[in-house]
Length: 149
Ligand SMILES: [Zn+2]
Image (cartoon, rainbow, N blue to C red; front, side):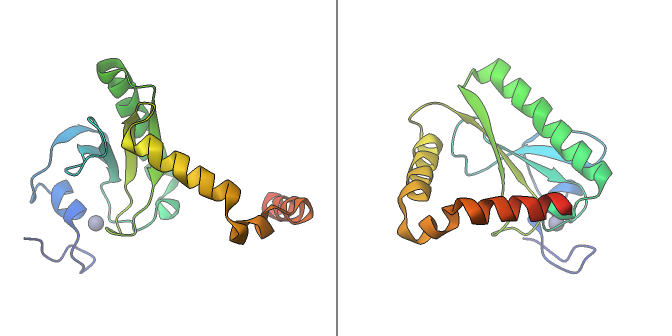
């Protein structure tokens, strides 16, 4: 059962950070915590979360960014050492639980995550709706605009 956090919303990750919900804690540092995902895509699938309720990773403070990614890097190193996957995939979503969480997933060729990303990349390369996004002039113009930031 969850309850309102300091921001007035229900958030299971805030409950875990406060020690009010159970979790398989793997590691933590000043602003971040690493836990096992309880619905893993692979053995060793971890989530790295900031200790503060921040919905999207790009809204983290510079200190939180450093802490969260440093912890993800440490966890990935430990996963490589212990489980010896091909590599450790890293991605961020947050659509289902709007508290930043990095997915840190040991990956082997042909496992479910590898097949999913291969299918996604196949779709990315072949979908007619995405072909319009590949125009070299548009890509060059957008890259130039992003560099100006
Ligand atoms: Zn939260």
